[in-house]
Every structure is written in structure tokens, then in C-alpha cells.
Length: 376
Image (cartoon, rainbow, N blue to C red; front, side, top):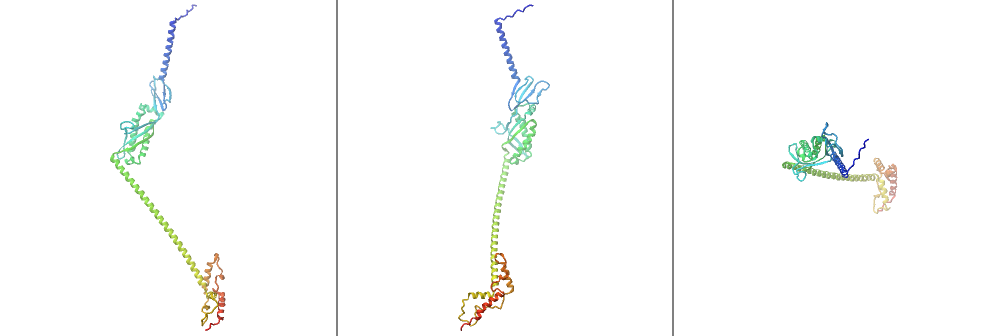
């Protein structure tokens, strides 16, 4: 069997081969890095990646957005488009110091046809699952350019649709908040189907009206304010008058009650005095008068007297009337102390009638009969 002779490398040939192998390795490394850089991309936060297929039977926009992070794709057959999903702020204003230097304000008309200018501010964001649809429709991933075209037109149409049903005085006055709310609802119906979500819609600053219309509205508002102030003054005066009337009524009622109380007290005293006088009158019989005269007599007869004693002589023939006795008894029962009715026997005073009175009269008459006549 023939032997294969060994291959001998010269010193110069060995170095050349090693250099070729190193160069081949470097080429392979560069190629690998190039392929890696061109087939891998990163989707930033608050963005979604839309995979667009450039070849094959399913060419077009993929319905499923790519999540954030590192994404592998074929640069020869696919394209990755980043679509922002964070909140975007846009202002359409006439001021050159905010937004652009040109007038971008929104103009709409009221129900009377009055043109109203307004600076509009809007915040919105894109739903991630609707990003492929939005990109497929507009072929635009710059949301500021999308807002200046599609979104701005939608906002202007919504303002015109809502404001055309409202009078200019309402738009300029208390209906401004209602206008914003209705426009937001109207705009949401248009933009929601494309995945555009409205976070906030505002009117920045005051509305701009024609000078004659603004002057008329201001005059009307001033007249309304004056009318409200006048009504408030009328209510205040009426309230003060009602308070004064109530105070006067209270004072009159108090005076009336005080007078009624004083009259009742006076009447009660008069009745008590009348009752006392009646009791004294009915109980003052001739026998009582004779008894009281005897109590005050000092036992001396008059120095000059031709007949009977005038002070001790009483007409005892007339007795106390029965009706007067009964009335006296009733009065004494009403005025008995402690609320208890007095007994009929105790009701009559000494000599108020009956046998006791006659006995007192007889006892009083005896000293008068036995007294000697005065010397002439």
C-alpha cells in the first residue's frame, strides 16, 4: 500500500494561512453583527410596533401589534413601524405665542348664524389595539400631523353641529360648559371607531364675537345683573317689613295680654270687694249695730237728754229678711277658708238673725230700760 507523503508547510506559508483564517473569522463576525442589527429592533415604552409585511401572500399591515421590547423581524420581507400610545396635547389658537405663528383657532356658527372664534385645547391618546387600523387608514405614525388634519377637522365639524342648535347668548354665557360637554360626546362618536380616545377638550380663554354682538350681549347681561340686584333689594325690604310687622304684632299681642291680665286682676279685686261689701251689708243687722255701740259705750249717760238714749236705741221690730239670710249664707260658703264651705249656723255673725240675734238685742235693751232718766 502506497504511503501518502506528508505535506510540509514552509514558514512563510503557515503565517499566510493563519492570517486568512483570522480575516475569515472577522468577516463572519461582522456579517453576524450586521444581520443582528438589521433584523432586531426595540419598541420603546408608550409605543406599539406595527409589523408591515412587504412580501408574500399576506402582504400588508398585521392585525396584531407588537409588544414593547426587542423584536426580531425579516428586513427583506417585513417592516416594523412604531406608533405612540401616550397622551398627546394639541392647541389650536390664534395667539402667535402658543402653538404656531399662524391662526389655527376653531370658528363655528350659532343658531343665529353668528360666527364665534375659540382657542381649543385637546388631549388624546391612541388605543394600542386600534393602532394598526389607524396606520392602515392614514399611513401616518406622526400623531401631531394626524391631529392637525383629521382630528382638527373632526373637532371643527362637531363644534358646528352642536353650536348650530344654541343661541349665541347661551354659548357666550352659561351654556359654555354645556357646549363643551355636547361637543365631547359628538366628537367621541366620530373618533372612537378609529381608536382615538379624548382625554380632555377645553376652550382656552374667552370666546371671540363680532363687536356689535359682544356689546349687545354685555348690555343684556348688565341689565340682567341689575334686575337681579333690584329683586334682591326688594326681597330684603320685604323681609325687613315682615320682621317689623311681626315685631309690632308681638308687641301689640304682649300689650293686649298685659292689659287683659290687669283688667282681670282689677275685676277680681272689684268682685272680691263687692262680695265683701255685700257680706258686710247683709251681716250688719240692728242687733250687731247695737252690740257694737255697747262695746264702744263708756257707761256714761248724756248730760242733757229728755228722752231715751239716742245712741243705744234701735228699731228691733224689723227682722232680717229671709232672702238676705240665704244670700249671706251662700256668700259665706263661697269665701270659707281652706276651700271648705262654712256651716249655716256659723255663717251668720252675732245678731245676724234668728234667736241668737234676738237674745243679744234683748240683753242690750235691758240696760237701756233700767237706766234712769237724766236730770233736767
